[in-house]
Length: 445
Image 1 (cartoon, rainbow, N blue to C red):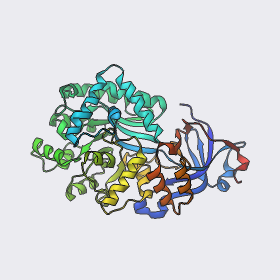
Image 2 (image 1 turned 45 degrees about the vertical axis):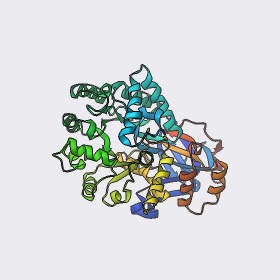
Image 3 (image 1 turned 60 degrees about the horizontal axis):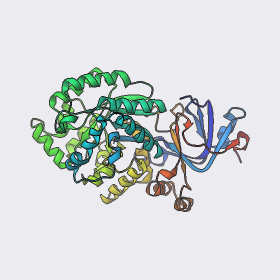
Image 4 (image 1 turned 180 degrees about the vertical axis):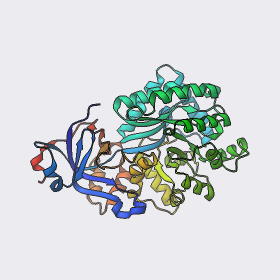
């Protein structure tokens, strides 16, 4: 992908300098009329038209997107691309849903060409909803990871993914011996990890689907390749936690099992983390591990309500995951809406400003990528969205009357859908039609 040498866009601009739960209003940067300046696919500067006008190159054109809001691209830290075709199909609780929905969907990847079809479909849906970075489970089939990485590389996306590791619990056709897993995973690491904007994540499905020998292989890989990511599930349901107790009786807790295998570390992403004791929560907070909050799938499967505030208080790095296909949509905005509802139900409201942080700078921090994505800091990669505040008649009327930034963002999260995303930009280039151009001399008008 060739980057545009210099590009300037005018509109309202929002990003974060820090977590607003800690930094308050100072953590948020909002310009109701600002310029976003890009050079060679990276952020060159952000400021008011008056502040930046004298710094722009001669004859620089400015794309006039007034009436729109520019934000960093959304970050989805937990999802399963082979399950895109079963999203919004409930089937009871987690284990019933796995048997009836998820496993058959993943078995379909054995059909020739199916990995490519689903990878293209998933990425198209992801981008349509404004997600520019994702951490993704592929299938157990190594070609499913290849297909996803190849298409993401073609589009210049930042993507973290890995093939499933599982040698029990699942149907025989989805199992892989430890020896075979070692061969296929090693090949994928060598092929994709650190290539362009891609990174590899070891992907044990969850403890019940893995023997101790397979978990030990993950520990060995993490020691051999410290820059690898790891993604798995933790304490999504009470039944899951009970199965872990039965299968691994020598470990005092689910968290202790993962700790013993080296999973509790920065660059590890644990999805759900609902049914944990306070001691387990504190252990997560002290370890540097990250947690993906997946409220939409939790609600659909009846898994439980994640104690977001408790995890925040002990210092766990939090982000959000759409969790396709138990989650019904690739939309991070809809996932944030569910996160706000879940917190309201628990009597610990989540502001819209805080919610959007989790899907931008918060997600970047959870992935250890805050030095390159998640905000509009100079030098950061220019992955960002242009949101149309008048995308629907209701949004146009309501956003025009918004009395605060939190109210504005609340309207976008709770009323918005894919129509809100007017333009998705990857490394400074729009993958939707650009807005009208105005001469640089008119930026102060």
